[in-house]
Length: 318
View (cartoon, rainbow, N blue to C red):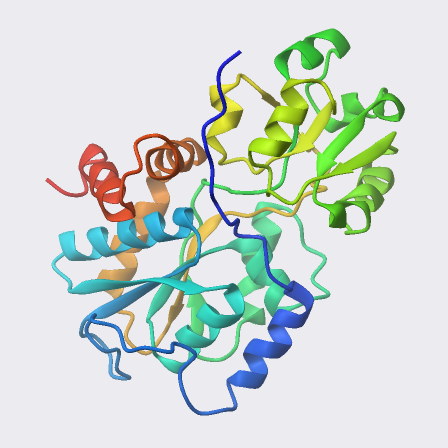
C-alpha cells in the first residue's frame, strides 16, 4: 500500500452555486472591482487586442491551468500575465465581467449551474452546448478540454475485485452493505444519495462525513476499510498513487466538469482563442493529476514552474 500524497487543495466545486449566480449578477450592476488590491499585471481594458490578464481561483489546480494559459498566449506572440488566487467563482466571475481580468479557467458543469441554477444538462456535450446561451452578455467560453475534475465514486482495487465493480451500476448490487466517505452535504445534494437512488437504485448503508474534500482523512478511511466507497475528485493524485478504482458513471449522475476558459469578449482576439483552444485540445485529466502532484505533493513546485514544464513537454513552448 502506497502512502497518500499530502493534498491541500480547495476544490473547484466549493462555494454556493445556488446563491452564487445571484451574488455575481447582482454585483454586475454595481461599480468597482471585486479585487481588493491592484495587480502588478498589465491592466485590462475594453478595446480589442492588447495584453491579457488571466485570473485563477483560490486553489492550486486553477492556478496551474491559468499559468498554462499565460504561457500558451505568450508563446503565440501575445502578451499575457496572471492574477492568481482571486477567490471563489462568485468573485472571479465578477472580475471577468468588470474587466479586472480577461479570462479564467473554469469547469463546465459548475459554471452552468452557477449561471442557471435550474440547469438539467449533465453530459459533457449537453453542458457545453447550453453554456453560451446562459452566460451574461459580453462573456463566452472557448473549447472544452478532455480534462475533467469531477466527483467520483472510488473504491480500493481489492474491493473492486472482490465485488466485481467497474461502474456505479455494479455498485448498486452491494450498496446496502457499503458506508461512504464524503462531505456531509452529499447526503442531501442532488448528485449525492438522492441521485444515486434515482439513477442507480443505490441506497448506501450510511455516510461517514469528512470535510477534507476527498483528501487524506477520506483516503485513510477508505484504505483502512472504515468505509468501502469514497467521493474523491478525479484529478486527485492519491487515486493513481494508491491504485484506487474510479467507478464509471454511465447515467451521468455527476455533472460533467470539463476544463475550459471563461472569457470577456472585449479583448479576446482570434489569435488568442486559437492559442487557448490548442491547450484544450491536449490537456487531459491525467495531466491535471500529474500537475496537482507536482504542486501539492512532495515536490511543492510553484504553479508557474509546473505549467512551464507542461508547456515545454507538449511542445507549445520550445
